[in-house]
Length: 175
Image (cartoon, rainbow, N blue to C red; front, side, top):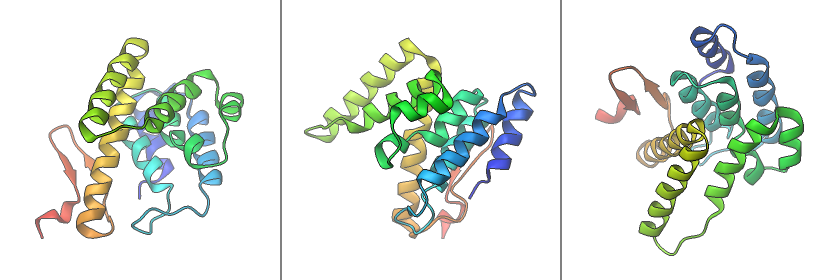
């Protein structure tokens, strides 16, 4: 599992003047509200938000986007309220987190309708804020990779490693 220090180091490497305090506070908040939750693989639930935030940091997104990556599911999966997110992290973080929460709460009749609606929502988000589009893309890709790895292996040792040339999910996939 990626560590918060690794994420903060990436953010500072990309932008030495970045507000890493918001990332640290988002990590602590997310860890607190997700305490005791586990994924199907048995890993702590916090591993997923950490992976999303790590990917966002790799993509050189700003501190607000990385913090939102750590918080992207706290409204729908925990007792956290939107007002609480806004009070602690500000309107920009709430805007991103709320956008992802609204997208995940939509009900669909079939997979094609769900996919079409996801694309429509991403395009609308892009018109509003490009960072939301990047965040939603990373969120869905991380979830896709995670679920594929869990389905194949039951657990993940190295969830996702990004390099400028390739994306490798589950390095043991060749087995």
